[in-house]
Image (cartoon, rainbow, N blue to C red; front, top):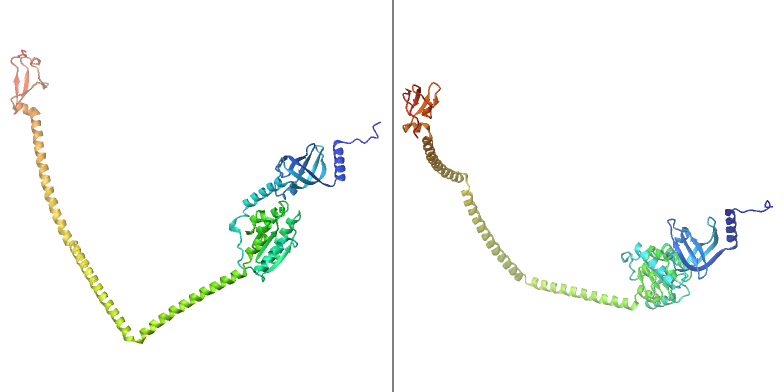
Length: 449
């Protein structure tokens, strides 16, 4: 009974559902709050869009999200343009986002701060890279709306201050989603087509809400301003308004009229300055000419009586001659004294004088050495006599000279120190201080003590 039924697999069912969704929904605008936002290593944005009752999953692929000038976060209220699709592996409905915008002033301010930090880190606001504005430009290009009040204010100021200044107006849209790209293209076209002709660019717009000034906070406009080879003045909004374009530009003007005043100097001021400089130049030249006239009159007065000039010069020559002679005499005397001192010093250092000093010193050393040797000899002789007396006092011969004798028993010739070692009839050898004698023992008398 089930043979005629068409049975779907899960993959086939999800594929058909995806085709139905994508076929019935074209590009749709969806408004909601961002939640569960995450960015994996692939660079794609994955998040959910929700309102008070429902939510839908969303994805924004890397090739689309790299153009955003802000990074979404949980809680942001956004407006998305995308197409409805189905993620087949999980069977989940999702919104493939093509464009993403923040809704509300808070979101715009956060995008502004994020872009400002990014461009500052890259050095686009570096004061050292800003180009100087010409003092007297000959040709100014104004990029602004052709029908706005900004161009009228600029032309009015220029006509009042310097009517001969050439102005080229490049009309652009200064509000809306297409304005940023159009402004960036106008800056690039001005650098490409009018290079060498235009001295300064004025990027101008009148006041407006923060949303109205949004094109001047776009990254594409900031990079076009930074890449401009022609100095650029940003005059966007009122004095209290600040945009990214103001930070990147070479000079910021609070209003379009102020930009024109900064670029064009007043003709009257320039004329007064030129007249002042001309007067100073005339006074300087007149003073220099009068100085030269005085010097010429003085020289002419001196040349009218040449004998006076000759007498002054002769007196000067004589004075210098006397000073020179005295100076040379003093110098010769100093040199003579130095020469005499050197001669005396050299005489003391002659070989004969040095040899005599050495000979005298040698004789003194010889006498001292001889005297020292004699004293040493006497001391050693006295010491030797003392040692000889001590040695003689301890010598056996000395003892024998005092009347003692050494007795040796024969035939062993062993010294006898005890009379008990002898017997009657033994033969002994007696040694005296001079000579010796062989004796026979007649009677042995032991020690009575």
